[in-house]
Length: 83
Image (tube, rainbow, N blue to C red; front, side, top):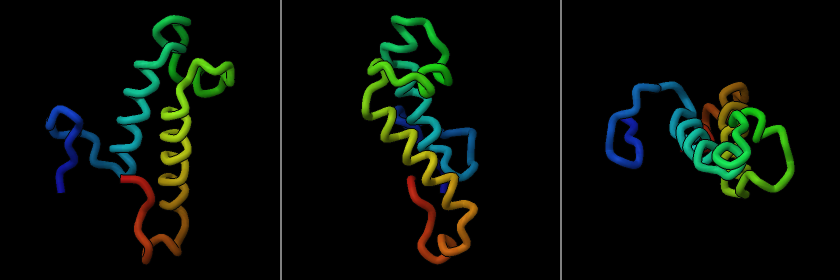
């Protein structure tokens, strides 16, 4: 199964959690923290000053849960979290 981005282009990254990772990157790059404050996306994730939207924080949590599910043997039966 090929993964597509929002424009319908094929994603090159076929690793698990690639869709969540791409959405998190896009969300962070479009946030005020990166655009107005000229910080890196990594710095924006570590700072809790309210410039990162709650959507990006939710995507960060989903990405964490997706990566954690790769290590959990019980998830082999339930499937990975995320998309």
